[in-house]
Amino acid sequence: MSVAEPRRIVLFRHAKADWPQVPDHERPLAERGRTDAAVAGRKLADTGITFDLALCSTATRTRETWKLAVHELEHRPKTVYEERVYEASPGELIAVLNELPDEARNVILIGHNPGVHGLAEILAGSAEDDARDRMNRRGFPAAAFALLSYDGPWKGLEPAVATLTDYWAPSD
Image (cartoon, rainbow, N blue to C red):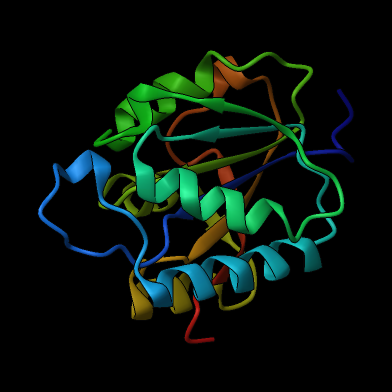
């Protein structure tokens, strides 16, 4: 692996969910969520990243978010629906990422707060431009994503080893 080619990790929070009388895991997207998921997909496409793998929570709202967002990408990556991403802590998400095959260079994880936001904060040992300030000011609203770069094998992913290179939220 070349230092000139860091791994890229996008941490993507599901879009705005509705609150019908169903179990939390089964909550669908709200109308605004469907719109924001597609917009986020276009913003992800604008990054120019070709994702090798998508790890998506099994919750309805994350699956719907990813289905709408991935439709905007030029290349559809292999998608793995991972039960452990639902309600995961940052530490649990790191454990899932540590298991990734090293052939996967660019990965997107579609999950939930507070885990996704916490993971972005924990992994980012440094940040470019004003990405950290924008993330800290806005928090991690529905359909937001953080882009991090990392040099090293997935087994070595741990706190403060990545660089937060970009952050986007629907209100941007």
